[in-house]
Amino acid sequence: MNYCNYLFDIKKEWLNNTALVDIESEKSFTYAELQNSVIALSKGFVNRGIKSGDVVALHIANSAEVVISHLAVQYIGGVTCLLDPLIPIKALTYYLDDTKAKHLITGKKKESMNEICDGLDNILEANEIFPIIDSNSNDNHLIKYEYLKDEISTIFYTSGTTSKPKGVMLSPKNFSNHVKIFIKGCYDYSASDKLLCFVPFSHGYGSKSVFLPCLQSGASMYIMRSFHPHKVIEAIEKYKITHLFGVPSHYQQLLKKEELYEYLKKLKGAFTAAALLRTDTAQEWNEKLGYFLDEGYGLIETSTGVAFRKNRLPNKLGDIGTYPKEFVEIEVVNEKFEFLKANERGEIVIKSESVMLGYINKKEETKKAIYNGWFRTGDMGYKTNDDQIVLTGRIKDVINIAGIKVAPFEIEAALNELPGINESAVIGVDDEMYGEIVIAFVKLNNGLELREREIIKYLQSHLMNFQIPKEVHFIDQFPRNTMGKIDKNTLKNGLKRV
Image (cartoon, rainbow, N blue to C red; front, side, top):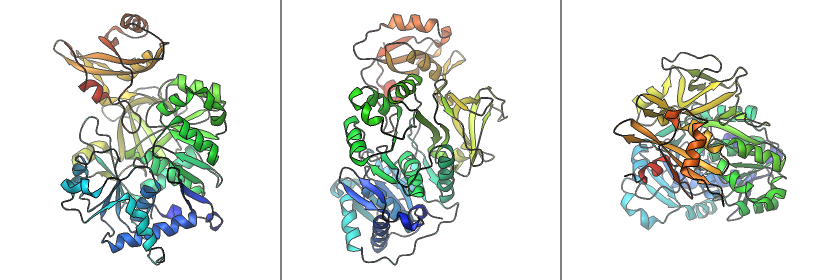
């Protein structure tokens, strides 16, 4: 088994299909050309001493270089550690030490890496990748490595919002099952489909949910460095894009620009994940563009998506659809790990061949996360009578007010229903009397004004007294991580209270 099988085991009639286009550099590869580039780079890696089992860290922005480098590492049986390209150079040491990486490929200059180069056998710049390919383009005799189904082949890191980032170890079995889940539960592409990827390839969303099902079907992936509404529209028009992938904030930005609607209406599908989609955003997309904004749910520990809502509106915030039962099991449990009945709230747990091997160097945390084969997501929610999954919050996000547990999720849902509020975030902060109190941050729609007392009065008729925020802070822009999620730690750290 090998990630590269999806590239090399394709139908012969797809060899001349476009496989990959780097929109910024305008580099384009057919399936045959991509195969040849991967083999050539693999040979170059071997010549530099990279071998099966070696961890190769990729610190590269979305580009043809990161895609081909990842494929080449997989081809020779290495372990690709896909790192967020925005990780500062000084912070790279943690990831390199944690994975015992021997090789680093980066979008930065080598000279800037002097302080972290000890112990590394190779440091390559992204701009060296194509010269290596060109110098090995006539050598196509390298044999592709075959991993054992439970052999580690990739490492992704969690966001680390509550602790140090954890390295998630994934195997060929994991991403093989993910492809089955995605095709059955979400999209089954045709060879003529064209997918636009501006979500990070360094995250499982880009390198698993977008790219692997694309290769499986002979479709084309068009990769962009980052999101910008007008650049997205230019790509849709120039390349005749059929499917769009993003996070909720991307679609909220697109909806603000009515001049773009005529182009967005040409898509066959639009998909969001990584953060929950607001119901009003889903409704507005459907009303103005004439089709549904589909949504997926998963974690990097489950090789991304396991549940999907397609071709319908969400009934409420957190309604993320159902799952293909032949490839994944999803249940809800209480604190004693007893399975709950429909509509009973508890922790979402997942059993599937797409569940990770574990966290690297963290046996105890792995034991806590995987219980009797079930992965404990840390997400709270319930299943409806027809097996639709509804999320209601995160266990670790619970605010403890004098012993009463409050879910920020429910307060945010109420805030977001108030006309004039564009987006909200709720946190708990320490308090001598109550243990914790609720603090809300809100971003208003342009040109609209709301006062704190108006918001509090509204919430008093929608929430219980102990859920009402003690303070409401108005904010122009929310701090976000690279996947578009609001960074609540930054909000909390920047909070100034008397």
